[in-house]
Image (cartoon, rainbow, N blue to C red; front, side, top):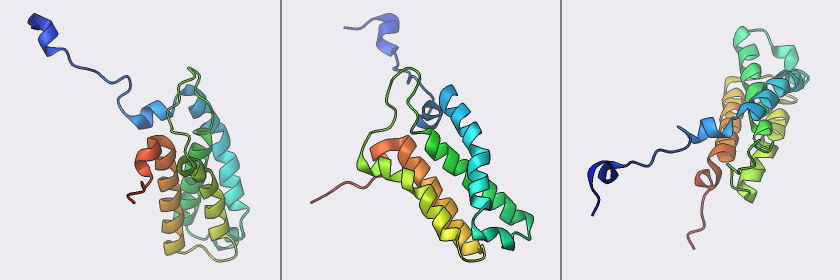
Length: 140
């Protein structure tokens, strides 16, 4: 029988959220270093001739930062712990920035394509951070 403070002991998670655990100092530095490079990659796409409005510049900035965050999740953690399951579903998220870059190439940047690419990269980042919980499972 438990007595006193032993009866109410709660298990406190090591990190407040999987998002915070996935972005440690090493990965944050890599993401910060890669963000300008990925933004320049998106600017180098044929889309740049249609960048007339500030919203389009902001969308390209968001795409660059999301791509850098996805790439940073592939960097090993400093403590050696794995935060992301190494499944094919989680590894596929590394291709999403390339797909986003290809989807913007060859056509003016519209609202639908911008939304598609932001959602695609957001989904890819959630796959890398949340691991297999964001992937579908076989029910058969």
